[in-house]
Amino acid sequence: MESEKEPCEVEYTHLGKSGLKVSNICLGTLTFGRMEESPVAIFSCPTQADEEKAHGIMDRFVELGGNFIDTANMYCRGQSEHIVGTWLKKKSRDNVVVATKCRFPMSTEPNDKGLSRRHIIKCCEDSLERLQTNYIDLYQTHIWDDATPIEETLRTLDDLVRCGKIRYIGVSNLLGWQTQKVVDYTKFMGLTGFISMQQQYNLLVRHPELEEFQVCKTEGLGVLPWSPLSSGMLTGKYKRDEKMDPKSGRLAHDLEKNSKASFWTEFAKDTYWDIMAVVAKVAKTNGKTAAQVALRWLLQKDVVSSIIIGATSIKQLDENMSVATGWSISKEDMETLDEVSKPESASSYPYQMSRLGNTLRVNRFNPKPVVANI
Ligand SMILES: NC(=O)c1ccc[n+]([C@@H]2O[C@H](COP(=O)([O-])OP(=O)(O)OC[C@H]3O[C@@H](n4cnc5c(N)ncnc54)[C@H](OP(=O)(O)O)[C@@H]3O)[C@@H](O)[C@H]2O)c1
Image (tube, rainbow, N blue to C red; front, side, top):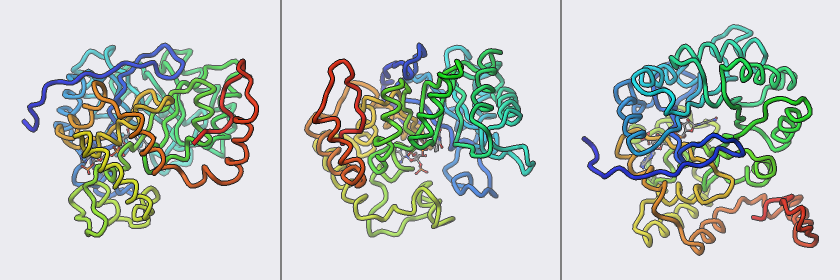
C-alpha cells in the first residue's frame, strides 16, 4: 500500500452550461497501456500502467469521490479504453461519467482517420465495444479535420446523440476561430451543442485564455485542462541544470526518445524556470507541493469545470486529488502566479489594442469580455 492518507473530498460542478455534474478532478488515462513501438513516445514510457495497476488507480479515484474519467480511442491504440472497459464492467456504470475521443488514425486504412461520418460512427462503435458499455457520456473531437465539411461532422455527432450512443459532445485542441465556428454552426443548424473544450492549459501554457476560452465563457463550454502539470514539469522534479534520467518519468523519457517532440521542445526556456521558481515559493509558504499549487491555480480559474490529471501511482493520485477542496490559493498568490506566467502575446498587438474596447466602453447589459483581461 503506497498511501495511508484519509480519503479527501471532491466538488461536483456542472460541465459547462449542461446539466451534467462531474467531479472537479477528472482522471486522465493516457498512461494506461503500453506500446513498445509507437510514433507516440509516451506510450513506451516505463511508467505506463498495466491493467492491474490502472484498475487500482481508478478504484482509488472513485474512493476519493471522483466520477469523471477521460480516455481516447488512440491512447495506446485502444488499450486505454479496453482497460477502462474491463474496470467499468465490475462497477456501477451509471455512477461514472465516461469521456472519450475520436479523430486520429487507428490504422493505415485511408478511411480510418478524420471526422467524416464514416469514421466517427466506426470509432464510436469500436469505443463502445472496448469500453463495454452502451453509451458514452462525453464524446469529443480530438483535433480539427480540414478534409471534412464541418456540417458532416456536426450532423453525425447529433445523430449519435439522438440514437442514444452518446450523451453530450465536446471539442479538443481547436483554435479560437474554429471554436466559435463549430459553436455557431450547431446553433444555425439546430443541432446538439458542445458543452466542453479540452485544451492544454497550465501555468506554462496560457495562450488559450486569449481566444478559445473567451468563446468558452460566452458560449457556456466548460474548460477541461489537459496536461495540467505539463507532463510532470510543474511538479518541480526536473531541475534546471541537471541531466534528466530517462527512467525518472514521462517527460524525461519523451525528451530522450524524441528531443524534437512537439509539446515539450521549449522546456528549457528561461521563462519556464522563472515560473517554476515562483510556484516553488508559493508552495513553500503554503506548506504544499509545487504540483498542488499548479493544479489548484487551474481550479480557481472561472472557465474551468474539471481538471484532467494524470497519475502513474496512487501516491501521485492522492497528492493531486487533495487540491479538489478544503484549500485555496490566496488572491495575492494568485496574482503573483498570474503575473509571472502571463503569455507574452497578451501584451502585443492586437490583444493590447483590442482590450481598449473593454476598458473604455462598457454596457452593463452586455458585460461579456471581448478580449481576455490578462
Ligand atoms: N485532448 C488531448 O489532446 C490530450 C492530450 C494529452 C492529455 N490529455 C488528457 O489529459 C490527461 C492528463 O494529461 P497528462 O498526463 O499530460 O497530465 P499532467 O498532469 O501534465 O502529467 C501527468 C504526469 O506527470 C507525472 N506526475 C503527475 N503527478 C505527479 C506528482 N504529484 N509528482 C510527480 N510526478 C507527477 C506523472 O508522470 P511520470 O510519473 O511518468 O513522471 C504523470 O503521468 C491525460 O491522461 C489525457 O486524458 C488530452
